[in-house]
Length: 191
Image (cartoon, rainbow, N blue to C red; front, side, top):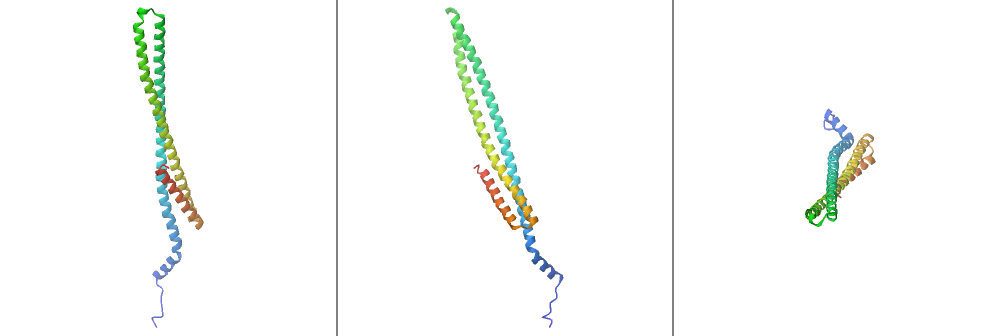
């Protein structure tokens, strides 16, 4: 008769309790792990967004510096042009025997102007290149910011789904997580 009689020990009661409530613990654990992973991804995205924004500002500053240097060169070019014009005017006003040094100076100014013009044009080109690089970095920054925002919303959905135990909110969290990760991949690929 002892084979038909079963006594529940404390461990049997605990096993039954865990088996009945295991689904809610696994749901909470799954959401908690997902939230931690999303927070890590979001932190990386946020860092990359800040880095690209800083690069964009640095490149824009370099463009402004190059543009200012180009402007300085154009002003210098104009000063040389004015001096050349004064020498040419002097050539018209002076007698023939006193024109030699003025002709040499006018020729020298013409040569100097060409060098200054080439330098000014190179600086303007450099400014355009820096502006282009800045624009590329700002586009990339926006990609990182979009990815970070979607990941943050996914984290919020994870918390709400955990509190309400609504499966549709969990699915929304998964969908937003996927969109956030894909947005980050687009940023990495610079698309």
